[in-house]
Each structure stands twice: as structure tokens, then as C-alpha cells.
Image 1 (tube, rainbow, N blue to C red):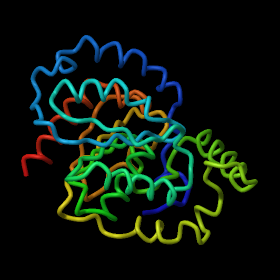
Image 2 (cartoon, one colour):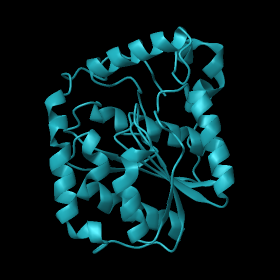
Image 3 (tube, rainbow, N blue to C red):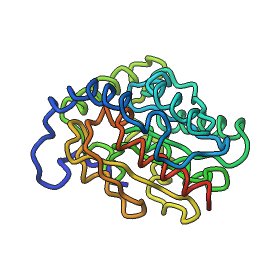
Image 4 (tube, rainbow, N blue to C red):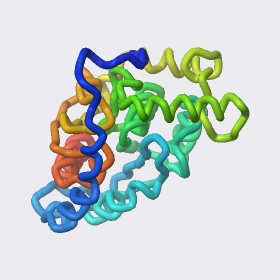
Amino acid sequence: MATSGKPFGQIAVPPLWREGRAPGELAALLRDPVFDGRGVPHGSGETVLLVPGYLAGDGSFAVMARWLRRIGYRPRRTGIVLNADCATATLDRLEARLDALGGRVAVIGQSRGGSLARLLAVRRPDVVAGIVTLGSPALDELAVHPLVRLNLRVVASLGRLGVPGLLSASCLDGECCAATRELSASPFPTSVAWTAIYSRSDGIVDWRACLAPEASLVEVDASHLGMGVNAASYRAIAAALHTVFAA
């Protein structure tokens, strides 16, 4: 997995104003039949672990968790309050959470949460039945808006100064995450289903960085932040989970 931080290809910076659509996407979802569970396949009590995005916590998935319960799944939280810690430390905790849940689990991750879901599937294909990633730049984790990269540098600086719970610059090239970087370059297991949901109008992530060749790609018209409360995303998620657990 590349992590160059350079512009992915030679496209313009994603317009950040697109993210202002997120409240409207939530309002539209609440009016859409899919939120009531109509027109999509339902589950039978299978477990789904929800991994929040960068600087987000479990609360960011409150709406989706409610919907997943409505359509017959068992959504489970990660215990993450702020997803800004070292990738290796976070991955270790997620693996422990998987083991505590027991059985085969589907993992839904938004943005950085999707990148962690991919790593989790590579590390534990015996437990992860499938993953769904929402706006996750799998081909280059730093193919994001310059303001987000600036934020990452600030967080990394604080982490280097010893502020607990934050990643640091050593996560990119130090020993602490060497094994995780090696894991990110490993082939994705063929036994694990992967649906990658992306949007060309994403205002934070370069959508082309989401087009992992190992994944089944689903395009939606959504903002980056709103992808987790977007009706088209929910239809794609329901279809993906049905495929995962019907296999």
C-alpha cells in the first residue's frame, strides 16, 4: 500500500466545501425507505464490527448501528473514542475485540477505519468474513486534502512529544509500525469479501485512491463525512453483508 503523501495522479485538490452536504444526506436517509429496512436483504443476527474514521469515535456510527439492528444484524462497537492512535496499537486492540466477539464477523470501516479493516482482514482472515470500506484510500493513505495532511502532521508532532493516544511520525517509518507496514503490503486474502464504496465527489479523499483492485467497487454520490449516513451507501452495505454471510 503506497503512502507517498503526494497527490494521487495529477488531479486538483478535492473541494472541501463538498463536505457541507453531510447534514442533507442524513436528512435524506431518514426519509428513505432503506432506513426502514425496505427493499434490501436482511440478516439473521450476524455480527458486524464498526470501525470509525480518523479523529472519530464509535458515536459516529450511531445511525448506522440503529439501522443494522433494524435489518437483522448485531452491530458492535470497537471502544474507540478518538481514532488517532498508532495503527499498530489500534490494530492490536481491534484484534482483541474480534476474539472477544467470537465467530465470523463482518467489519465496516469508514476512511481510516476502512484501512484498519483491511489490515485486520489480512491479519485474521480466519475471523473476518468480509469488509466494507467507506471512502478509504486503500492505494495511498495520504491521498487526502492538504488540510487533513496538515492535521496529521500536527497530531504526529503531539504524539512525538508523548501525548498519549496519538500516532507519531515514527508510525510512517519507525520500528513501532514496521510489521504493520509489511502487513499493508501483503496480498488481500481471497477468502475475505471486500466491498469498497467510494464517491467521485468526496471532498477529503482522492476517490481514485479508493479503487483497490481486490475489492468489489461501488460508486455512490456522497460526501466523505456523509458516506456513513447516505442512502445509496446503505443499499450497498446491505447487499455486501448479504453476500458475505450467504457464502
